[in-house]
Length: 237
Image (cartoon, rainbow, N blue to C red; front, top):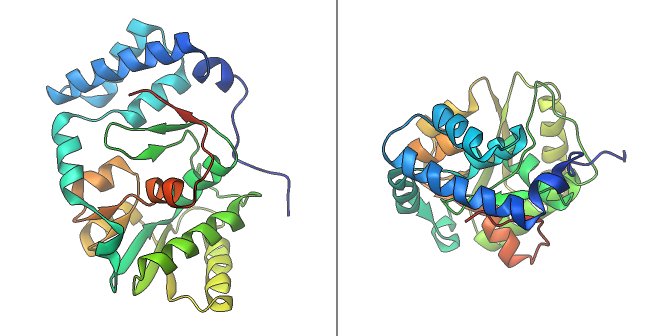
């Protein structure tokens, strides 16, 4: 096992731990909600609000991830399923979205709860995925969820163009075989589009997917509560 994790960036404590910064972010998210609910573009809104409150780039990134319009919030809530709704169903999991968020959470990176009740982080895949110390634990947590949900099947969807997507597929399938789990892993060139167009139940915190999917389940929120996960939460709301 290597020594990598998805913990905080240098400087994140300065940006996200002081009450002064938290207060600024709380005001900023209220302004974003106001603008987005009046159909202002997200990028322009975040630049305007970011300039007004003199936010740094990572604070603006967090702000964008946590913000949504009133229509988006209601639409997402209307489609959100509970754990009981997953019994005997096939659930599709937005692979890198869920994997990296949970790796970040377990690495004690800062995590943000959005206006829609979803948790998000500041990590991402930039053309390549690197396994970290927390990867195995994440897969085990998702297995616990799978058992408790009594879902029929779990299908992980990963971005085919991302380097090492084939390797993480092997790791997950090996784990599923060892533990007798009805899991499958598929690599797609456009996973977001695939998930929205071809599936009934999705696990993701990706805003675009949540806006256009049929139904979704808030896995990270469920795991935080059910498995009593420790979380380095920035309370912006």
